[in-house]
Image (cartoon, rainbow, N blue to C red; front, top):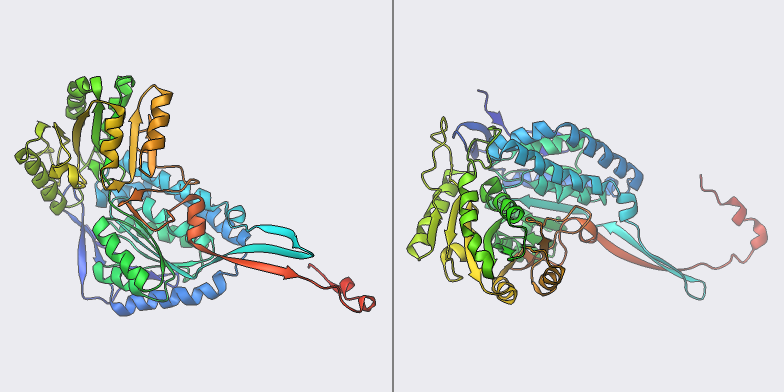
Length: 499
């Protein structure tokens, strides 16, 4: 098998890095090396940023209509290449093919939203704010933007960043995850095929050193990050010191509340997919289920649902979840499962030692279920990022709200109930950015903003929707008054042409 060498992308061309530091990209189901990715040199990152800065001079003046048409072509190409992109995701990340195709679809929604840039970037105008004085605003691009993404959504996360950034007239430098970069690179190739000019979208690769260089660089005006709380917090401080705007979407501990009046089968079916899909490697995964009152009697059904989930490689059609992304991720998840046992949680279903026929070397951990979990346990306090579901019992809705609000994270939460009053009370009092009502993973559609709160987010503005337009632009306010020419008979007005 030929091992791909992942290039950089600078000035509209794939460029081979001259770095001496290359890392293997591994299929997590087989441990087969499928690609090699460079950790770019300081000079190569500087070149990508300088190229983007130069390209901004002309790109910022490209008409909105032309940018819109590029986005229209881009969304058509993503739709055409969905199967190819999903296969690349599955090969390097381990997701099942249906799950990977679903990810491409969520990314596509953002590009479709960017196709409306001709109306999204409009300013405001007040005629005669004073006597013959008009006041209006212009939403202008910032300059060079940048994005750094985690491994778990190699298509959706960059789509949360660069389509709207470049559609609003910025140029962009992107650093994908070094663990699964091929699908991200293919996405960038499709963007250039759609007509994105050279230098408008550049790609570099690397680890913490490259991320720090991007955060520190004064020629980058705005930075979007999606990943762990630890890394996001460090980069946020560096970006602030460098005077740049930043949004950081970070860690999570998401709760699914089940009320006794909920539709039992639908609630449990939805819980299984949200807890164990993508092997739990989602920042929006429901890793904690809060059973309220008599709903605690549903534990046996949750156990049965957990045991029914099928583990296999991403290419296996009937697999519900695939492998974890790396041996290190598997080791960490299994260590946390052992810690949960040691700290007194009841291990109802143990996913350790999971064997998949024909894939002895895969990073597989089976669906795992703990009951009698309390807030002081490590498995509750840490984001496990694996197929591990914790069951917590409370007596009332108030107890559930208080329990969730006491957690430092506020990324997403959901509630299953047939009571409109309960649902409204929950959405009003819960201090979490994204709320699902009878919806297990409340990631909003792309024309609404991805929010998050408390320790799950740094920065006022999140990706997508109106907030993204505000993040990637700066507002210029113009106050204008025009005087009538002194010599009207000169015919000056008659010479004005709009051609």
